[in-house]
Length: 490
Image 1 (cartoon, rainbow, N blue to C red):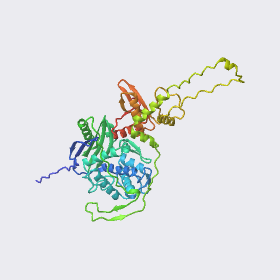
Image 2 (image 1 turned 90 degrees about the horizontal axis):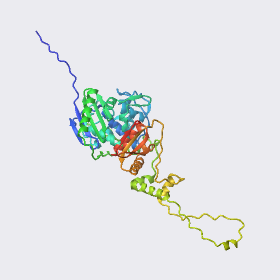
Image 3 (image 1 turned 120 degrees about the vertical axis):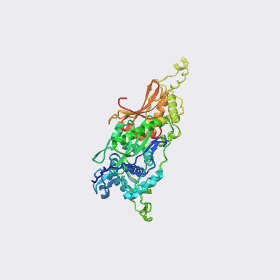
């Protein structure tokens, strides 16, 4: 009697790798197979978006540039935005779709818009990765779909996530949005479950393919501590999220509460200068390439001077110089000038007495009032000139200067931030002024407010939206400044 043995086929699990790092210093707190080359899946889009931010910063392209979708981009498999060949869409919507929904067609369109082709863009991705120290990473496409030779490691993706956070903090909030408008389509964050479940989580990117498994790079902040963790090869969304939560908890236990910030060195800009497509390498930097084919294309491919987006006006040069020379001296001069202005005017000396006989001997047709005595001119300190510029009609000053700022009550501006507690009201106001001048982009419309408490004076900015308050805190954190969001009920 023949015996037939039947073996159940089992899906081969993707290899597991992990890395935990102190975001502030780059210190590795835990690792497992961190240098094993694996499929990164959509973690790749972190590099695609990083280069997009770089290109915008250097004027290669703008957020409002209308991108024409190629047949190649439109044919990418899910996850996708549903772009059509020939369609025109603003770059800002492609960035949102790639960051929030992890749309493959949007990522490919970004790469083609910046470099002319996805292959050329992949070469730029590899140059940027090498400059960051991602020594075991090689990109073949802009979206992370499985392709031979498209590999990375948990260590390299952690390094990349840290660069995204520190090099382009103004864009980092994209990765924490639960949803976004992508040109008429509302897209939802592929990482929203983890963002909602883990306290302090604020990004950054998920990834999944059958070959890669469930990948995630996540960052979270608690107090002054910020941890970034990476997992490759999760078995499901839930198990991956649980593992990343464990790794972040481990990081918060091991990381010191206070430490000096050591930002990573920003890689040098290596894009096309002046918006001109220069040397294009066709094949030599690919593994197994037959040699380099170099084509010189000197025609301008985009506007050299893109129109600036409307935004807050740049601070006057005098204010920037004041920050550099020390805001303490500027405030002290203003206070001194205000106090001097409050001194009463000098009383004129009494008029001399005239004998009555002399008065009787003089015939006066009509009494003429004596002219008012002219007070002696007093020197005008430089600080008074500054005050005159700020307020043309100077009323009698109070005992101490009063700082007044604008406050908008529209748009749900019921949020704020606190940047520290100080021993004196003067010190709190000084820090608020210096911070406002350094962060006009996010705090230009906020109200500076000092709140006295039992343990000191809290320096607050109020009159912000929730998104504006969170963005301001992230930007201040990137400058190693303390910041806490204040909600409407706070």
